[in-house]
Amino acid sequence: MAKFFQRLLNTERALESVDIRALPRPDFNLERPAVAAVLDGRIPAPEHDQADAFKNALNAIYGRNLEWASYFDAVPKGCVGMKLRIVEMGAFFTLGKWTGSVRIDLEVHDFQTLPLRCFTVPIVAERPLANVLEQEAAASAWEKAAAQLIGCIDKALLAVRDGADLEAAFQPRAATALTS
Image 1 (cartoon, one colour):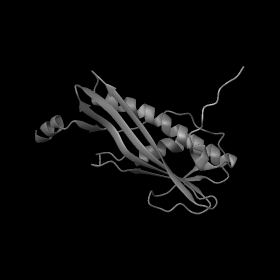
Image 2: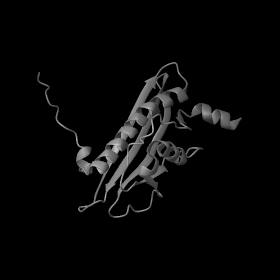
Image 3: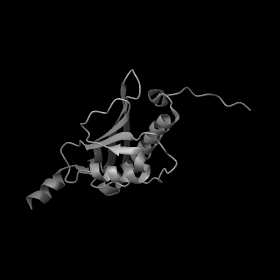
Image 4: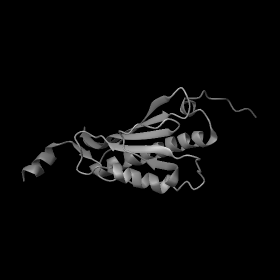
């Protein structure tokens, strides 16, 4: 009974399952797979760690183009690494509505050549929804964040495959006018 009242008073809920909706990428054929790792770093720790669910979903999409390692392992020289840290994934209640909120930090390590470079791409999605359950709000934010995550991983792997500057691939570009 005490747990019921504690949950009733708590205005935050963790998303307990993830589903990444994306088609497999069979045309990616990296010469050397990217080193990948996932850490569910949410605080407080949720009942269900989602690191394995992320790995399974990303394996289904990218297959042998990702080589899994521990999050705390160093990325070897000569490799590209992508470390995903789940920072927030759930919903919170404010002003009569649930707001789904997801934050994932994608840390990209470009250790193919000197100088060794590392940068972080924040993936953030919030979705305030009235008259819905907390899991619906969280799932709605997750769908937006998952699409951003797949887009960033695609961009990184394409840059690796094409021998492009990985860091430059993530820099904002100035808009160009279309002329007829």
